[in-house]
Figure 1 (cartoon, one colour):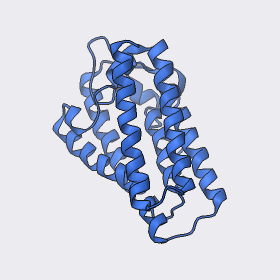
Figure 2 (cartoon, rainbow, N blue to C red):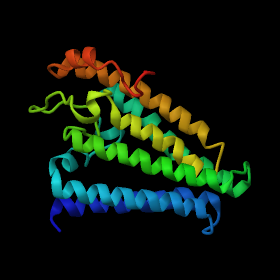
Figure 3 (cartoon, rainbow, N blue to C red):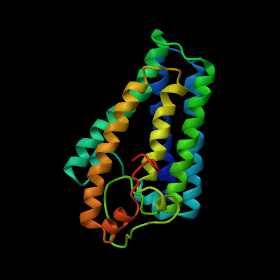
Amino acid sequence: MDDLARTAYTKLAKFQVALAVVIFAPAGSLTYWQGWLAWSLFLICCVAITHYFLRHDRALIMRRMEAGPAAEREPRQKLILTFASVLMIATFLVPALDHGLGWSRVPPWVSLLGAALIAAGFAVVFQTFRDNSFAAATVQVDNAQHVVSTGLYAHMRHPMYSGSFIMFVGIPLCLGSWWGLVPAALLIATIIWRLIDEEDFLACNLAGYDQYRARVRTRLVPGIW
């Protein structure tokens, strides 16, 4: 295992440990099957995606190594990602508290539907990464970067966010909570804020983006927005 793979898998392991704490500590139980379902899905999907791109697109892995508010270069994006990070934690935390305190009752089939949405969201994100090697974890433009307009990008300008939104809805459902949809909705609104600001940045800094934006009108959902 080389240094890049070691770093990527170490970060992934730390994320999975933190995710387990956020899910199971507030729930107060290790018999929380919905928690195990969500945690296992994230583990399988994250490991599979990391393994694939370590073999096929190491530049993408390097671009996604640094993430979060501290890694952002634009002050507004630092603020946006601070809100998004808190809401992402809340999207897992609130359902875990819901389970422990019994705020809502969700049928098992809804949890399975939520699991399917998480998997579908990861599938869209995976395809986005295949289509666009420049899909960094921060808002930036590399020296050699160009506008990507093929694959999913031929139909929508931000397919990674579209996949993430599917996943955000699936997380609280998979974890067996209606109340978890509240932070998930706020998280989606925050990422839309990020998207709008990111488009302004790309229009100023990425050659050809304005023409691409004029040609591909859909941001997230074809026929809607």
